[in-house]
Length: 390
Image (cartoon, rainbow, N blue to C red; front, side):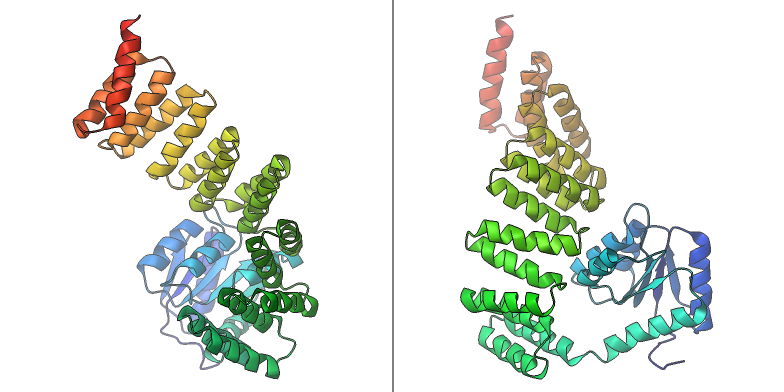
């Protein structure tokens, strides 16, 4: 067995099937690895990664609460844990899955069923790549470090030298395109993205980089085409579908935007932030019913997000769905009973529903919490005026 595998490392095994977790734990034990944590779903796995020191993650693709891909994206977005090696396990693998996993930076994947030697070799392969990164990977990391410090010329120099050694590396081309774009050299950046797309038409980051650049220039038709090419290669990325929807909205095509947003919401799963962002896009387009659906999905994942409750309430009120708005505001108050803004928003919904006594009660509570709440004072006068006329 390779010395790359450290017997003292802690491995997290995430799978909703207890027999599979048991099998993998047994294989790890054969390698001499005894320090193993388990999770029966992606949400539990993410909690353990954030609370414990995990050195390696083995996760199933399909899991409840948070899928393997959602877990992967969450880990890569976490500054403290983004470098943890991740091995994905799946019952089958398609070209779309490979593309989706690759762009989410999975270290490797393995197909069920598998035997000990296959599992051990795959773990060893992942760790060897991490221990001895390819020169392209090194160049990209060095260039990123310069870019983060705004040393753009040095980053350009690193990528240019890398391309001298690896002239057909689409990854280096895209990295160079990104830093040129950030530097403001849009012409050369566009050329570099297009060259990357010619060298490797299946490299998604090239199409995405070009799309971002074109959209910033107001060339939304071309940006949409580039983004749709990326979506065709890897259609299961909710962020990309969201961005496609936003461009359709810029074109005034609400029907196509709604299709893209629906796909994004279906793929977003437990991503409460993405669902809320889609809700905001719907709100901006005056599509309050659709916004309410997105906000509700966001709250299903994060039921304590007061700002989303407020936005949901506004969306429902705008469509005259006052009783639903009232119900959502009451849920929010259960989370934050001393939030005067929530009392005020609930009072507005009650007023619009012609429940004047209840509205007045909420306004009094809001003013008790904040006696200088001007909007609440004004609404209270209006409610009292209407109430006196009955």
